[in-house]
Length: 627
Image (tube, rainbow, N blue to C red; front, side, top):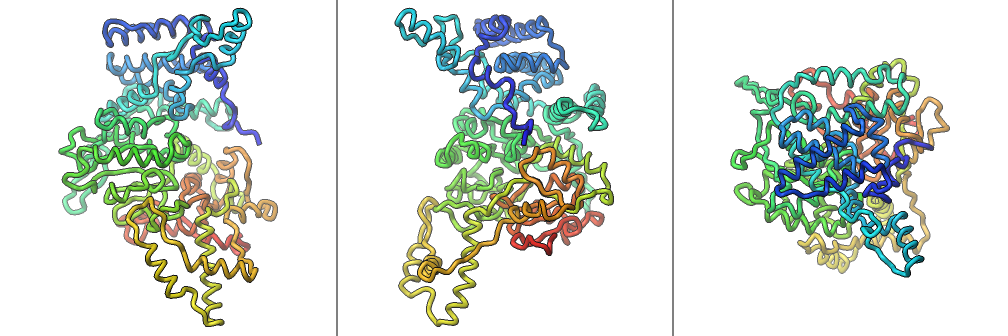
């Protein structure tokens, strides 16, 4: 099924084959040579680069709303566009101190950077052009004419790396500086006009084609993220209310609440590890593990942030390992090594709290064990914000105790973008429950149980089967010698050492092999749901369809199924809630975030109990009783 989300970008070929923009307009070549000049001081170099970029935009016909200009020039000179807007934005913010103008320019940098996986910009910007198609043609042609095998592309008048004065490190450092500068921002006089313009885009929604809808999405995301309107990056004011003391009546505002110190990624003491652990912020922010990035930038721009560690109640340690490990930017072993190197360097970790006041965010299904397998040695008492609370990872060395500790850790929802929230809320609000023509909805892929989930279920089935067999035939499932061997295998303090063998399970499996008995495992809830697609016409059940179909289904259905996937956590729960569809959670091991706020213990009388707006159903009983 065709989906625009998976379409190859127009700029991709030129980005990889011509990063220096030698095949683009001659204006780009002239600008690149100008930007590569170095002057006597850093300040003068930056001033001249900003001047050259400003002249280039003026002479090339760029205007603030020139989406056509951006599309045309990004297609032929992607890195050049990033470099132009980066140097202009940095000069506006840090030299001219014009925050709004700088952030407006910065949205272009961010929109381009979010398309590039971590490290990709630096990789391509440092590319020797002899490996590109055009470069190979020039090298081969020269060899045929002269017999010389030359790879120095400057001999052909082509650029040598780095092609543009820009790097991923500079972009991410500037991104963090903008977040910091947004702390304490008040009302911007131009905010209302911008807000009205964004909200009037594509109203009603069906009045626009897909191209215009995409533009509206980008504009709204830029407004939300860059802080180009009231408040900080997240539209938060220092005076925004957090809580009220019921006894004294004292109002705790964002500026008067607890204080958080954020470790500086660019601090020379930590930069070796933290720069690598936080690379690709724009890209990682937009995927399902984006909470690691979002919370980093929340605390960077929060009125609750303090620059003085002596005033801090908590300390935030940024890292985006869920994104990096899923993208295979580095291995789990390399990640563990970086953390082992970083933690002892953290100046405020050991004294006085021994790490109990340090906050880490773990946004992946592998929780902490994946990126930091030896965490129990280094940060066992620290506070974890986690999307995943169950134990499911198939690591042979893994401690059988889950990473999540309810007395100190907080379960958070998976990342869902502001635009997704807004669209689900808007579309869902337009369709009242009585007018929804589907009873149930599920749009997603067929995911079997995770190997460890099936292993646990298999063990449960075996246990039940052999308990009956043991009673009938009066034999021991485990001999005294086997008990001693199992006990000996339990003694280990190193998380990297293999854990004990399950002797009982092995014996049961041997019995099955000898007897030829078959144990059938139940299908996953997703597999069972997808079988309903043809069976029940009043159900909206689909897979292999564009993402927009999920939005349409959630807003057209009364109940929305939320089955487990590879692991327990799911952002689907929150998407369907915004669409005002009743979630039916088919996930026995999922701890829903913030349910304590909606249970019997909540102190707010008009807040509904969680069981009033959600349905939990056994995930192994997705059958006609549920349908």
